[in-house]
Amino acid sequence: MDMNNNDILIRLRYALDIKNTEMLEIFKLGGVDVTREELSKLMTKTTDSEVDDILDEESNECSNVMLESFLNGLIIFKRGKQKPKPGQPERPPMMIQDDRSVNNVMLKKVKIALSLTSEDVLDILEDAGVIIRKSELSALFRKEGHVNYVECGDRYARNFLKGLAMRYREN
Image (cartoon, rainbow, N blue to C red; front, side, top):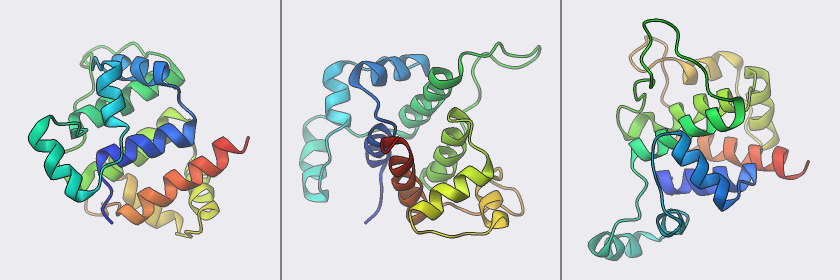
């Protein structure tokens, strides 16, 4: 089963035990105003047959821009707002180029937000039953277009979020 942006949001929220008010604040920190009603729709799992019906009515799909804005907001929420260095733009450029890069960007930004080391990420994946080498992990963190860049598949993303839940919800 393919994971979509709504699944990522739902799993992240669960893993990090984020309350509704915090979700709204994180979106706002990322530059997106989301109402309670919109949040409720984003947090509702849908089956493929429901998706077609719902998309006809009103969309509750989390776009790539919306997801990345949430991830940027999560970094600010967890680590505080940083002043841009001279010559840097106020907002970082969007890193999600297309649907294929969503998981890589999610992995990178959650790693930053939670101040995780590569070792931490390897441990989190191992907790979820996935063992990869450090070189494989660094390929997932490369910039898209880099010669050693590797697309992060749903299996890694899903298990990373599962491992996060195991780590953050048990403590």
